[in-house]
Length: 307
Length: 310
Image (tube, each protein chain N blue to C red):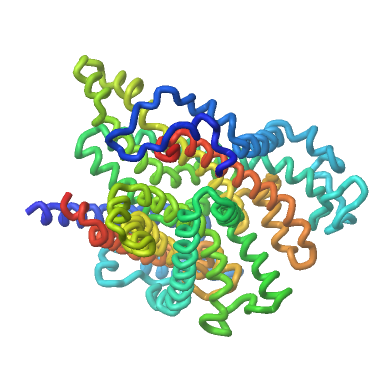
């Protein structure tokens, strides 16, 4: 990205060898670098719009049409677009735009909830494995393998089948409980490399307690790669929710989500392809924006990428 | 001596993981709501004696741990149990494996070839329009839910353009498998190519590459031999794990393209509350996954002498 590289980094000579690279004290903070990247702005804008949809759908849903995803008229079934309703109606005659706006809430909530749970489990597991000694490491590593042993979708199918009614909470929890192993592995590796670092050794020598060392020295220095992976997980969970819903074991109506809309649209795809388009675009745009944001954060924060 | 301990540790870990995974699935499946026997009978009530007989035959009247240990014992002799119509699960699976294996291998090959090509090109053209274009295309494809991509491919290439069969396996390999494989490969393309690109870029800047160039070795040989070999180590790990996932994770694609594979069987079994079937299939899939991950470690050690020494 030649035109995107901020002028300051461009002036720093690329280190030719690892041994003679100079300390680069004049480097601006990563957050400042981030503000200069156009892709960061595009991705954040998309995400902010989607978040606005999720938090307060009512004012946006009314922009095109009646603004209520559940006010449906069967006479409008599969109409492609009508005055005031540019995005048309689905099989039940519900306004597609209103549905897509209201759908943001469920889809994004599932993504955030599942990722939050997975991240919490991964942090605890990673710290235990990385600092808890050999026995704890062995147990956590095997446990991680147990959960990695299920293909993600398969596990979700088996467990979600146990629930009679499925809502944002159940789907989010199930996806979170099976989503942590990769992050835990990353956290473990990262914790292990940090605990060997001089500043942790120094803290130990100073006689600081384990709790203080963990919260002040280990976690802040090891959490970054896991946080980046968590960003990507949000997107993955949103896609997974829609796939599960398509299979009939994700969310179910009367909930409104992108997954439900896309699943319903895929059943009438041959006669009314427009039903599928808007929710698919919303979902893909959100996931893409999340991935792009993660990429940008990684580029700015990962020292290896700055070369 | 250390190798023996290491191997023993791996085997112990393997056993633990196996028991853990099968037990969780067993627990999950057998606590499903619904009465499979009543579902089997349909509208007419079965006499109590018949229900008792079925319960006794499948140990359904026993506590869960008795059922589970009995199941583990049978597994050691290669017996995956019977489904509720009395056919061995292993037999039903045997009919389905060829389809799933063909699909997984075809998809995997496409993914490897495309992923390597895209990754190498974007690493060598780092920062150019080509690199960015490939990034947008691959990431974009991976962000679309698999069923949307599948249906779109069916409509576009199957119906509108009429290049490939829409569904089913009547045309045989490769025609019938091409479209579903392409869809699966498209979804996973981004991860493979990103991984190849990242490790290629890292290696292209490494000291040993500079040494090789300084010795006057041609650029083709430097990239092809020195950089590629080192970049393939993380990629090989990922690809092997990926094959394991593909063998078990094609439920959706097999459903959309109506391919009579294991994934399709599994989905029907879950829908019909065929507990023994679900457990049997899942167990088989997990054994495959565990074996692939053992193989991954072996490949890893083969490619990277540093791991063998450690």
